[in-house]
Length: 268
Image (cartoon, rainbow, N blue to C red; front, side, top):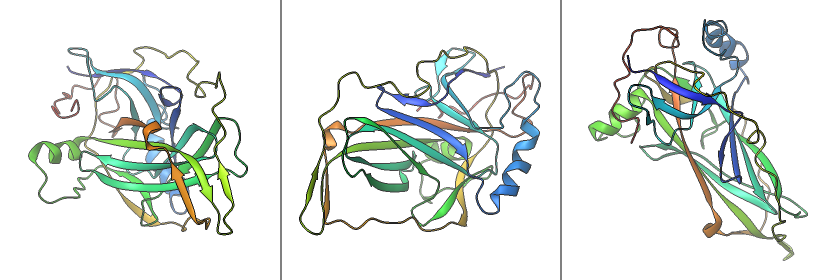
């Protein structure tokens, strides 16, 4: 049986500059719907509770110890609405882009700033909506964005998918009155991403994936926008992280199930 082994972590990190954590988004109707979807996964013998999305690293196919994607993943039940918290080391601010792979569908883009700028410190912002302001929802039915997807990509979207997050630091802000706000130089010895210093519990999981994808939920409130004349960013210092999303139903989220993990595209 080809199961998955992985180690639990508190967040998904990149070079101690970028930290991603995933939460259920219990807004609107999902305040009652999410708990219904999550309840069957609170008491699964031999596996961690999915009371919160389960973030893992070193995710491998146990049969031959090959990494799935780059080994970072989030595990959630089908049907839930979820969000990302993005933590980034910066001085003045940041911009980020969240993309669904491999179909390269942009989920969200945003710019955030500080005033005044400070020595390099963590900035945290959440993303819980698509660019059309609808909530991000995991579902267990295929949702292909392009009708002409190559077979490998179509199969990938049906069985699992990846999220890519790109973040770049803001270097200046020019206000409408002409005032310029500048980045503060990086401070030495910046702290590591929260949770990265704690040890992982190796080989705590042994499970299978379920067909899953992302879809749109009910429309949420539109985010506020701060009006400025212009922003500038240093793209050469951008940081990216890619992680898999594994969607589990009750049958697959089992320590002893006999389903075979057969999707050959998860490692692409």
